[in-house]
Image: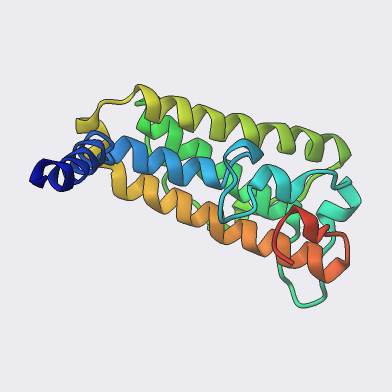
Length: 175
């Protein structure tokens, strides 16, 4: 009789142990939940947030000096790509960067390229994390976690602008 009661707890413990989170799994989960629809959970992903925007809509700015959606996306591309190159050992950190310079507007062609570029940069980040060993990730986890938080922060700004402008479909998330 005791075995009937103990066995379920042992099985639960075994399955919980076999699914222990790793640095890699946590960082990938964070990145994916802000990247594309296939992994959307709590957040609207960047791909969903910018989907269907024209360059005119993406470049709209209010009169208070806030950034446009295009500027926010280009800012994310700048930092995500630069940090990815550093993570992959391909670039040295840029010196004397004025963060304001990373918020660049976009022509129609540039906007279309930016939409593709943010997706490709985040896909490259996923691949880099998947291929990295736990030791490398342990030394870089804080930076990668902050990238994920930074992305989520600016996605929130993008959604705010879209809602303010009346061009956000609440059925895509965030009513």
